[in-house]
Length: 539
Image 1 (cartoon, one colour):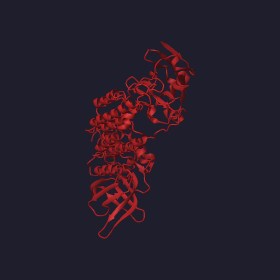
Image 2 (spheres, helix red, strand yellow; image 1 turned 180 degrees about the vertical axis):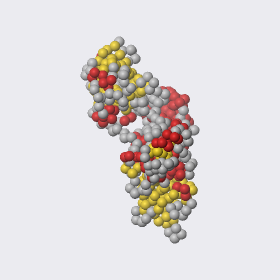
Image 3 (cartoon, helix red, strand yellow; image 1 turned 90 degrees about the horizontal axis):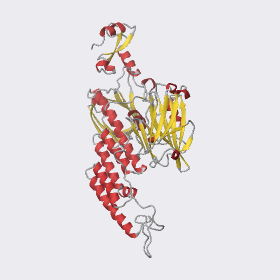
C-alpha cells in the first residue's frame, strides 16, 4: 500500500510502516547524483563518520545501515541502530549539476509488508543547490518518525557535511599549494586521508554473536536464565542467576573458550568456526557479550598475531586488512584496546602505499635546491659511535626526492645520497643505515612511527637505483605538476631541445602519454609547437 508524504510533514513511522526493517531508495531522473545516508546524534550532528554511508563506506559497524551499490538501495534495521544515533538523513549530491535539473524525483521507504511511503520532489523546488537533504527518520518519544525535507545547499556535499558539524577531508596537497611539514601525531592522519581508509566489514556475511534466547516473562525474583525461583534459603547471584545456572554458565564459558582457542590455533578464524561458536553460545545458553569478554585476552592475542603476520613484510595487503577489520567487528574489543591496534594497521597501510612509490609532497623547514622536493620531515637522533665514545646527536631528518638531509640541533649536519645506501634495517624506534661511505652511516632513532620513515626511505632509494617505477593512478592524467614543470624548464633552460627556439614552448612526453609514458621529469622535455607537431605521437 502506498502512502504519500508531503514536504515538511512529520508523522510517526508506525502510521504508514510496520516492523524495524526498512529499505530506502531514491529515483532522481535528470540527475547524476550520489546518494548517502547519514546517522546523526541527538543534536543532529555527524559526530561519528562511520555512520556516513555512501559508495566508499557501504555499511555501519554493527550492520544496522547498509548500501547495496548495484541497486543504490539502503537497508535499515532500526532495532540495531545505536542509541547514540537519533537521526537518519537521506541526502543526494552532484559534482556537475544543480538540482534545478531534477525531473519528478521520488523517494521510497518500504517495509517487508510492501507498505511504501512516497516522498516526491522536483527541480522546481531548487535553484543552484548541488546537495539536497531528501528525507529524514528520527527518534521521538521512544519511537521513530518520518519527515519530508527537500532542502538544499549551493556549496554541494561539503556544505551539507559542514552544516551537520562534520569535517570535509581536503584533497592531497597540490604542488601549487604545498602542505606544511607533517608533524608527528598528525602526519599519519594526513597520509591516511591521501591513501584512503580501510574497507568496512561485511555484516551481511559475518554476523556478530547473538545471545541465547531467554523468556522475558519469567516470574518476579526468578532466575534470569531458567525462570525458576530459588529454593528455600537460596538466593540469586548479582547477575540474577540461581546457583545451578551460575555453575552451568561458568562451565559453558570455559567450553566456549576451549572452542575459541581451537578455532584460532592456526591464526585464522574461518566462517564455519565462527558459526560453531555461535552454536556454542546457543547450546550453553550464554550471553554473547559475556562470552566475548571471557575470551578477551585470547581475542587480543589473535589480533596481535594477525598484525604481526602482516608486518613481517613491512606492509599490509587488502585481504589482510579486511581480515583485521572483520575480527575487530566480530570480537567487539573496547575502544581503548582496539585503537592502538588500528593505529598499527594504519601505519602499515600507509607504509604499503609508500613502498609503491606514492609519496606526498610537503613544505620543508629547510631551504632546498631548485627542483628538490621534500616528502617527509621528522625529529630524529643519530647515534654516533667512534673508537673512543658513543654519543647521541639530536636533530631532524628530511627526505627529499634527491637525498636525505640530517640537521643537528647543536652542530652542523650532513646529507645522505641515495646511491650510497647499501642496506636499510628497520628497528622498533628507528632505522639503521649502512652506507658506502663512513659519514652518516649508523643508527637514526627517536622517531615516532619509524615504519613510515623506513618505507619512504626504502622507496626513494629504490627509485634512485631504478628498482621501482613511479606509479600512475588508474585515471592517468596529462596534467603536469608545477614542481615537475619547473625542474624540466630549468634543465632545458627554457628552450626547445630540438631547435633552441624560445617561443610557443610546450611540455612533451618523450614516451607518449597515450603509449603509457609517465608524467615525470625524466620523460618530459621542452619542444616548440612546430617541433612538437612534427614529432606527433612518435617516440
